[in-house]
Each structure stands twice: as C-alpha cells, then as structure tokens.
Length: 136
Image (cartoon, rainbow, N blue to C red; front, side):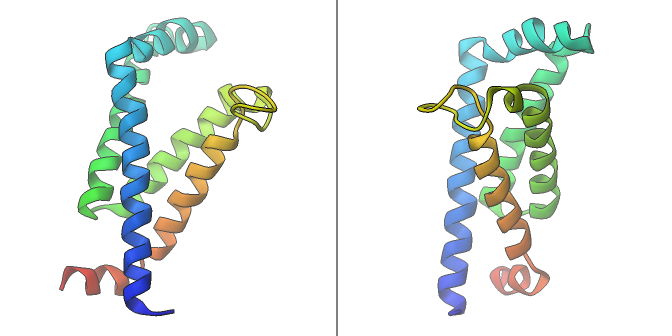
C-alpha cells in the first residue's frame, strides 16, 4: 500500500469518528439526554445514586476521545476506552433491541458495531512506525 494513501485514509478515519463522537455527545449536553440517561436508565438498573455522574463521564470521555483523535495523541488508549464504553452499551442497552438502529428495528447494535470496528482499525493502523513518521 502506498504510504501516502495509508496516511490519508488513517486521517480520514480519525477525523470522521471524531465528528461522530462529538456530534453525538454535544447534542446530549444541550438536549438533556445525558441527565435523562443517568436518571431514567442508569439509576434504575442499579447505578444509583451515580447514574448521572456515570452518564456525564461517558459523554465527556467521547469528547476527550474525539479531541485526541483530531490531534493524533494517545490513540490506542482513547480507542480502547471508547470501545469499552460502546461494548458496555451493547451489553446493557442495545443487544436486546437487535441489530438495526433504524429500518428493520430500533436502537440496535449496528451503530456501536461500526464505531467499534473503525476504532479498532484506527488502533491497529496506529503502529509505532506510522506515528513516528507522522510526527516528522
């Protein structure tokens, strides 16, 4: 593979996932969704009284991940942390809803699955040699 094409593809993946994570998180800040998720879901399934704090931690971790993806720092760490959050979302919320987010169902796992796959690809593409060559 052409090194230049690899680098361009790697940047595209990082930036597009950052945009998705930011838009998904920032919207929740302004529409009350984070507090609702903490109060009406997390507190009800056993995380009370910490549901709102956990919900905010999840959303803020997505924002931190997005920023670090944009500036290409701590890539493996933030990808791993975000994958963990997404897997927990599948286990706790989305799995019982099936595969499809829309169309053949509602609130399923496909969105998280795609994000996990792309974040895993970013982690694997972020080899030491690639990171060093980008810093030059």
